[in-house]
Amino acid sequence: MERFATDFFDVRQYPFWYEDDVRYRDLDILGHVNNGAMVQYFSDARVKLFYHVLPEWPRVPDVFVIVNQRFEYHAELLYPNRIRIGLKLIKLGTSSLNLGGVAYCGDKLIAASEALSVLIDSKTRKPAPISEALKKSLLAILN
Image (cartoon, rainbow, N blue to C red; front, side, top):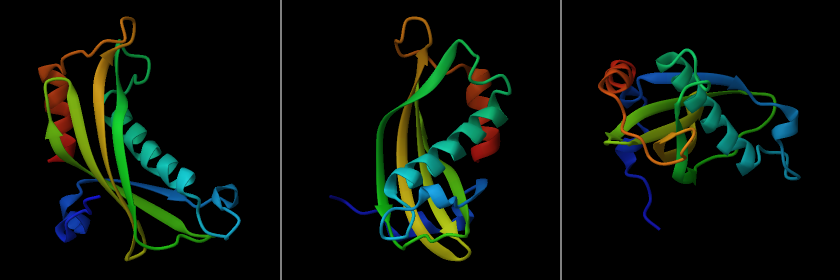
């Protein structure tokens, strides 16, 4: 499996940041944050991004759904702590949005992620084109 390139972790590449507290319930039997909780932190960051772009989200006719996601873990995350998730645009397609993400605790890299989402029509569940207005809003935040 291919690993992320070293420059992927540079915080200066990430224009959008979300912060959260590590919760006790996020821990596994080893006492560090479970990988499922880490997935949720990245999901929460994307939700926050979508709220910035579409204030009425998720009550909109078209929504982004994850079709592929990969993670790379670099360090343990312990309780209590604060985590910062950075998001950057990798590619904006006709109906797809590819986001890179990093998770930091202080200056320590915890994890990296890449998530490919597709915009779908909520009723038909089929891919929908990303409107020019939505593209403009995404680029304004992610560039």
